[in-house]
Amino acid sequence: MALPITELRQLLSEAFPDAMIDVVDLAGDNDHYQASITSSQFEGKNRVQQHQMVYQALKGKMGDELHALALKTRTP
Image (cartoon, rainbow, N blue to C red; front, top):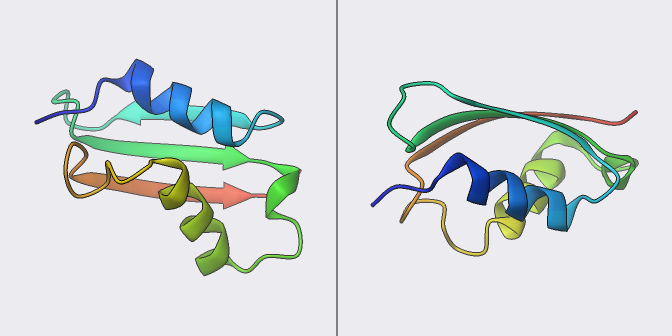
């Protein structure tokens, strides 16, 4: 099962409304993405905590509908 890029962007935008989000489909299969997210919500959080926030935003789709997600998270 795959996750359309539009749905991935929507989930991320809902969780991080202030963010600049860039998503790239790395393999053209709706299953391997790279996401760059710049959000003030990441302030004071280490990289692991930031990535946990992103995975939480995906509402259980990681590992099921989404196989791989390379993340780059940062604060503004």
